[in-house]
Image 1 (cartoon, rainbow, N blue to C red):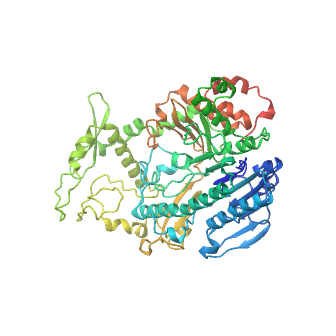
Image 2: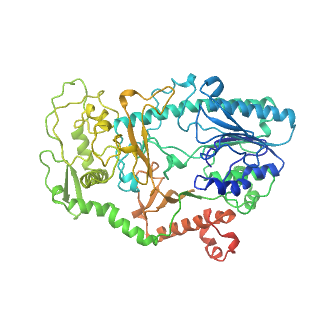
Image 3: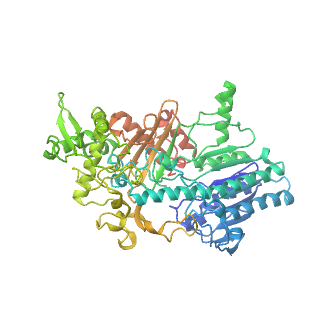
Length: 627
């Protein structure tokens, strides 16, 4: 789905469901590109056009089959100094905003295609795919928008800088809180992305205005969506798109057209593989048996019939799904879920980790001196956590400032053992990683005792990171990435080529962004690893009137479960709260969705999926496969 952002069609639209970055280009050209939505819609009598980003590996040496009008970007996203394939000819562009800015170029050619179509092809239906790279990197905004959103912080959600996460997969266990330079980066990156999207907004306005001017807007179906979300500091990860959490997998999806209810919202899960069958349905073409997904026109009809009380109409269409498959990478055969879960619970379960930590003598001492934590047994023989108070005097020159009421806060925290235990275990987790000198990134403070400093930070002098106000000197933070000598921490840019085996890392410096707003020289450079090879997973995302959860199995045999009704930001993995019967059903349903293909997948996506189990075991071989 790479590159498919927005499309406008007259009685049709596109989404290629078969090309992904995991499929080798040669196989894609010989097989998948001949089964794209462009081919299907052209065969159905449509005039087809594709403009914008195509695939990262696209060399621009051919025009894919099925497209009458083609303007494809060569290689990955760029806004200046790029090459396109324009109807078979390679054309280079420079760095002049008025002539070369790629977002505007895509918009201008899209408008021209629409206008020329009405002049030369009359009422013949057309499919127009508009694939804006924005807000992909390098996130170059148009000059007139480079001063906008100076203080925007909408990316700072509840999961922002919530780290480390010992209850999550391997990478998040070893990613600590962001350092100040990382915070500055996420803020600026978010700002630049918002700025680049202003030109996309302009383009959407121009395209819809063109359709309206030609009196075709009311008869045109329009889809607006994205292929993925982003994280910007969520769980301490400063950049990326490959996590199974809401901030990466949940994207806007707007639809307008004949028969679509105005100002209506649909909660049922819709995924990108639904776009292709929807377009074929709009065009009146047959949906191939191999094609995943389901026409959204059926969902629109269901919602409309329900709102109008048309019971007979509701009975004519199968209920919409409540579950979708979220996947990344190839999954080998794993042990039975029971064995994986038991092994994980023994290693990562909160009770097991708490018992292991509190059994150590250093945590059983009463609070004294600079000690931070103390474990003790309650009357019911359960471990309890006490957060030791900081009794040292504070002689601060900022008397006019009101300091946080730490003692009052600690007293309240002692009443909330669940929060205290989580904080204590995160602290122990950081301490163990540092003690063992294991690979990690971000800020792993792990203070097991308070360190005396001759510093007294005042409010207003601190970096936005919510670290310990009294123990952290701001001057220590800004230069931390440049000073660190810990070879186990990838925030040190002096590491050769900023690389870690089997991980996806990047080095950020002043060379990355060439247009304002720029990365300040004084912030220097830093290295960060945004993904790892073992971050391979298969997940169920379920939303219905009762349930709202994410269930995932990782290649490392790690398992997670998040109840988004209670925990919308997915802060707490509660897989250990599941009974074995529920866990085994989730794993079986996930297996079925992994192995199905075509229309058969809808059986296991529906709320009554268990009723199909007996029949699924006797499906003919032609219906089975790997999606």
